[in-house]
Image 1: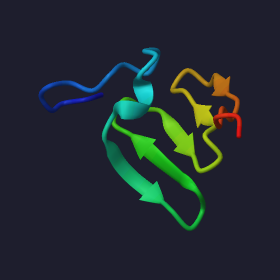
Image 2 (image 1 turned 90 degrees about the horizontal axis):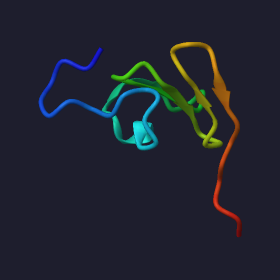
Image 3 (image 1 turned 120 degrees about the horizontal axis):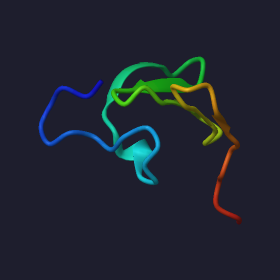
Length: 60
């Protein structure tokens, strides 16, 4: 999906959240990344293959 250089990390890469934001709805708490991942304000993620990554905020 990523068409710029250098390319963003793949959706299954550990650093997938480093991809560029292509659209967002901050009032709704989400952003779509160019690698197809949707990240949520609570740090949860939805991967392009439908897998859900639970929120992973650092422990206080």
